[in-house]
Length: 246
Image 1 (cartoon, rainbow, N blue to C red):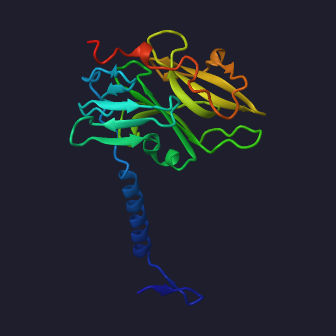
Image 2: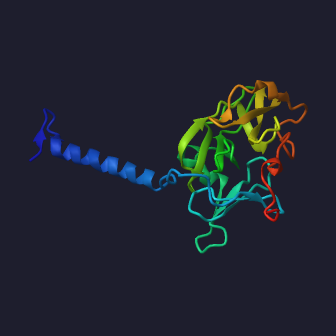
Image 3: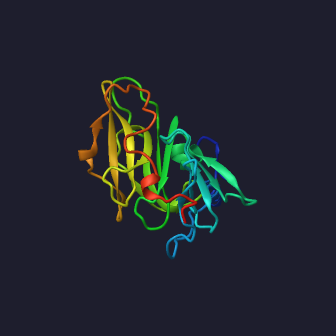
């Protein structure tokens, strides 16, 4: 029987309080599980050789299930990136950038995504940038700016995540800045007081994308709030063969 305090209000016993805490933990755990787990750690490079389609889409196995997936981005700056998992199979499903942003990123006003094998380990990696829209003269940094090293799941979950120190990023794209075999990242960012710049992060075998690449930061000129149709040096062509070139 529950005891009463000085006010006459029943007080929950220890067992009841413990039961409520347990229920809360289980509910929270269930919410997390709804996003699924990241793919298992791979034993080696993917058996699906990555290549570019004639329309510029990337074919690769991003989630380590042995089936090819298709990555497209008709916006060319991360806004309309989609991944079709299990292309051509009965389990085929298409996930937009927002669906790959995980819970913190999915709640933001904008989401941008890019896919490439930035560390050249044989698995495609995912970059997610998400945040609130820019307003006023002061830059608004993104709420989420992450490199999720592949393989990654259909909800954008991976076993290793690297935080990216990006400015107030508005758009991103895979790029080739230093002409080596590692894909780079181009970012269109707001520096404040109406000034926009192009930032870069270089592909790296240890971290995926290297910090401290200010030498590649350039003024975006009179571009304004609307980004250019393509970011400088952007494109997957330097890093992948055509799918019919094998």
